Length: 123
Image (tube, rainbow, N blue to C red; front, top):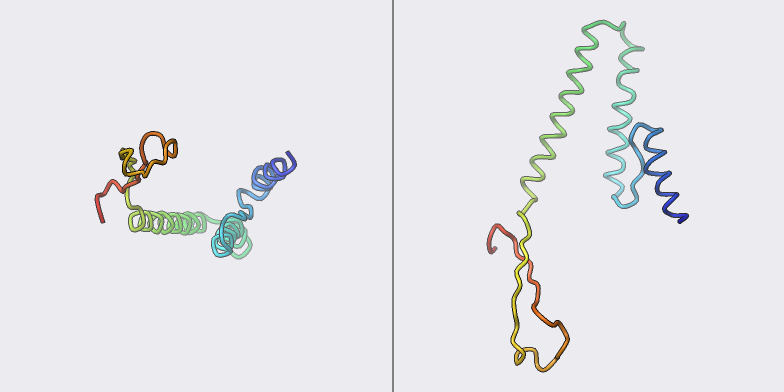
């Protein structure tokens, strides 16, 4: 109960207060640091533009262009990584074994053995 409440506070309340960022202990340090720096950039960039330059439509255009470029970059990297690393959908096959090949181990697996195979084929 206590750890569930702490997790709700950490992932729900803290993420809401900070605008969506929280430290995820299940991820490695690089991923958490990358998320933090992206979050800081998205938070601070409009303030820096506002303080450094007089707010005009050109500044709004620059801001929108930078955010669109960052969005496209992240989406492209995400797509390329998924395309490179995804191997396909896992399909499960049931393989039945005969009683004699089990060596008399009755009740060990009553039925079949589940074998997982990549749907892209062998290899």
